[in-house]
Image (cartoon, rainbow over all chains, first blue to last red; front, side, top):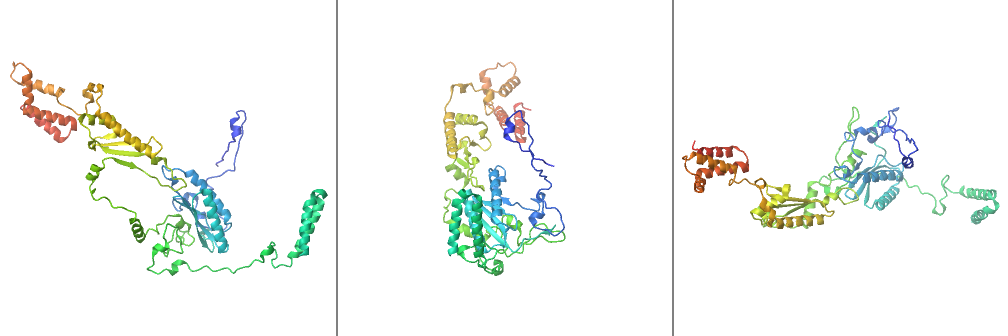
Length: 159
Length: 337
């Protein structure tokens, strides 16, 4: 079990006090794994394969050059990715069929999303335009969304 | 309409006077407004939906059917560059190939392309077919200039442009174009193309140290101490200029150059010469007085010259089959074996 401890700065600087801070335990052998159930829960390919399959049976959801050797900016790109994922998850509430794929081509951020046909197309267009404009202004780089819609989620297996 | 205006009046009244009359009055007024609001709503079409006011009832358009995917309408001889003109993620409806990607389920096949995230994740080169690249080349030709026809061999390029500068530009995916490694400047020039005499050449080589590679005769100066590439280039050119001028000057202390500082082996005044001459003299008729004239005569002899050549070759070039054989022959001739 991995217990992550966060240390408060005021306790750190004061030499006479001691404290213990704990978070909820985040076991690495339970991360991103949906446990076997009755057999009626549909899973997508992304959900069905566990994190140790990344690089072997799964690709990477986010592509940029910062993780190559000798390149800078990995942390900035990661934070941007996390924000973009949460933003789109919230904007297209209940419409996402699968995880978002983020690609960076030079300065441009391309967000590839698979959506379900839950909203009328006009609302989709509005939300796509809204996301693109807002994120472009926020990150000061061109943001493009490539959206594909499906009738229902692509099921890989049932657990 | 009258009831509507009464509503507004009572609401405003409630808000203005609630602080005087207290909470109970406010609640009573609110309840009154709520009751009247309900009565008007019952007659409208949208039951359970919030009041849309003057916008009117919600019009339910019937759900449109999705059209045929593009791949079903593609002729065989179409222009593929129109389907994928630029880099784009994989679109299963636009690519007429029955690709499957993914790890198959037990006793199954890899998942199909519809809704397949794996195909979207990977970079594809559908926009870079040979036809597309030909089109790119045709478009770029307008901006290109011909290579000068006079510079058709490497030798000519070296002759006219002896100094070669190498700088790297970096492209990365992200919001910043800055890369600190782009400031490094690499300057390469051949020592023989500089106007240096014997002494200046040797001094330059000594000043450069490991930046001068003797086998290829190339001086390499790498500058990265300044933050800007222009500054590093100027510094490299400055270093070259300074080295050139300094190597032409002769300082007073350079006359103290010892045998250990010499770059090449010279046979004159070396132990090898002394030993050879003393051996030869002893081989001569004993009793003859050694004098300068005898030594000069001995030095002038062809076998001694041959011996000198072979020793110089051995010392400068190192040991190899041919150089050791040459030394052997020279020694045999010298000692008349």
